[in-house]
Image 1 (cartoon, rainbow, N blue to C red):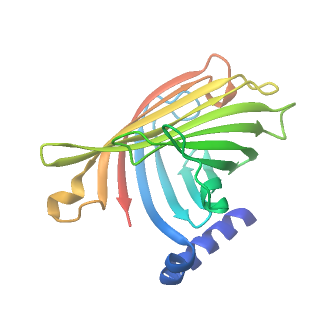
Image 2 (image 1 turned 180 degrees about the vertical axis):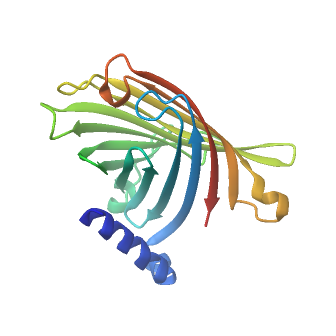
Image 3 (image 1 turned 120 degrees about the horizontal axis):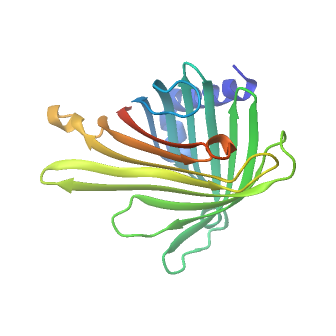
Length: 238
């Protein structure tokens, strides 16, 4: 386990232990979940696989943060730590303009076996009716193992909706990265459709099940490798 992972886990543990203090002084909102995914038709590594994911997100006095760590048996552990710093929160001035709700300084650290990449840039939060959030981040992307650097556009969205009395969620993300060194430009689009099954026994918002679809053109920057993999997903939120 890397030193960064230890620090992240320690931070989250302290935050949970002193939840009331954090909530009053820094944290405005937080959510944590564990996901189980199972899918097939993967093009790199094992064709069929299961993934266990830890996710945490929060909004705080200065911006917001998102962290996930995936563990896959054949490929090991991979994660992303993405803190953003809101210009509105830090300056006390509104950056709202049209459908733009806020502007942020965006950063991401990607880590895993033989992976250490840093992305930095700017992000905007869009005010679109029906969405809990719709975020667009524009990054400069740098992999120290590759020559040069490139750009990346990342979208993330979360939209709840109802069919009858049933609660559903349409969420996901998309990454569009340029070519860098020997790595080809690639596009990763991952939409999810989730059903709140927990409400069936009075635990609304605690357990969701659904389908995630992963489309990855030039996966890992490997030119000509395109993956289209459906995955079952179960998410426990606590």
